[in-house]
Length: 314
Image 1 (cartoon, rainbow, N blue to C red):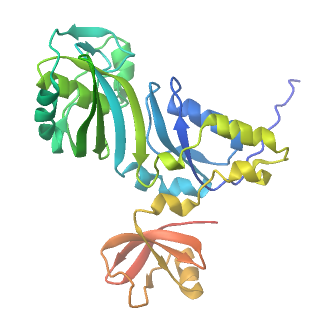
Image 2 (tube, rainbow, N blue to C red; image 1 turned 90 degrees about the horizontal axis):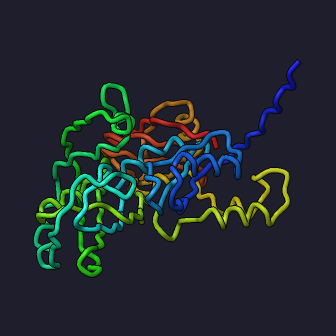
Image 3 (tube, rainbow, N blue to C red; image 1 turned 90 degrees about the vertical axis):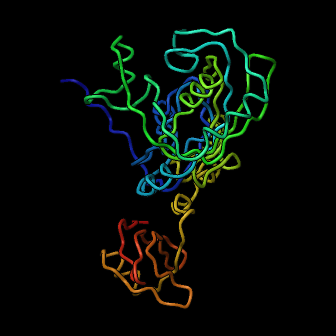
């Protein structure tokens, strides 16, 4: 009889970890490594980063996974380098060269076209992207040699600036944008508008919603913390657990309201409650509620009544 594999023990880790994702690993590979470090019963990330991108990758453990949609829908800030004169099939260094140009834009020309890429604009995603076409990922079709035609989609660019010009061949930009924006497409389109070609040669995400550079932790720091303290479970490793932020950190961009114990019990059963107090919101808006400093639920308040959408078990 085949030897039965021992089931790996999972632990109730709850909260957010903001990983500084390194180069040349996928977001799912990063997630897999974190699973080995923390052995959580539930985990997910809030927004994929390409293998050639680094920076802010928020990781939700346990009950924090309920707040992932709010973080994913938040604004993001990227710093990216564009190399002029070459266009690739993936709009970054992974793809094959598909077009070239001898044109090298001047700084004044670059700055002159940037206003056209701010605000609400239409963008065609890269062919090498996770967007589904007839049930298949676009990048799978593109890698199989199939011609992929993606439709333009509305996106929001809240801020776009030229940060640095490096010689004649490279420029560095910083962009603050909404959900669904592809920086690779932005670089491609800026280059085309300037009468040349371009692709992303360096990309770093600096911020996702409430999480920024000051919150990030590296794998080196996590590995060091895991090996410093010999504990039976990750939950007992104080240094390791110090990197985990409270579940409500993912809801920081919405208002929090404290309610009393009786109201908290009603909310935990999924029932609506009337919010009391002079500063209680009337709505309509989404908020989260706490009791005694503990996160209870998030939901929508309208006409002073709070209706829970998701209740937390902390």
